Length: 101
Image 1 (tube, helix red, strand yellow):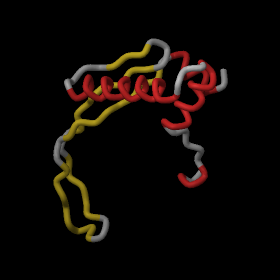
Image 2 (spheres, rainbow, N blue to C red):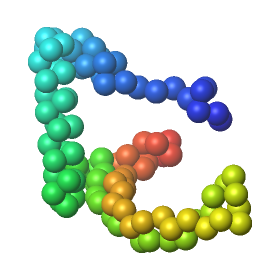
Image 3 (cartoon, rainbow, N blue to C red):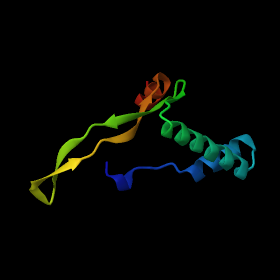
Image 4 (tube, helix red, strand yellow):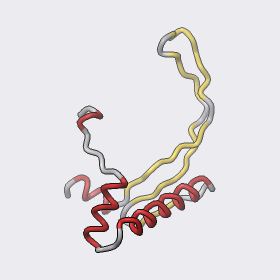
């Protein structure tokens, strides 16, 4: 499946759906979602894991320095520096729902 044909859910779509289902004002729903995302980002930036039971865990891992190649000039090696990346490990419930169990 190409990236162009994948369905994507946006923050805006989540806000509208939650507001419709709960009767809350869209701006209030947006504010809660945005604050949640801000705090998740802040926690990760501080080196903390963020866990949502049955949903999954966001964590920071470090990719070690490695040697890569310039795709335009394969004879040329490039040092790719150590960097931090965000990883997500899905929880049991999410795994089963996504798999269709």
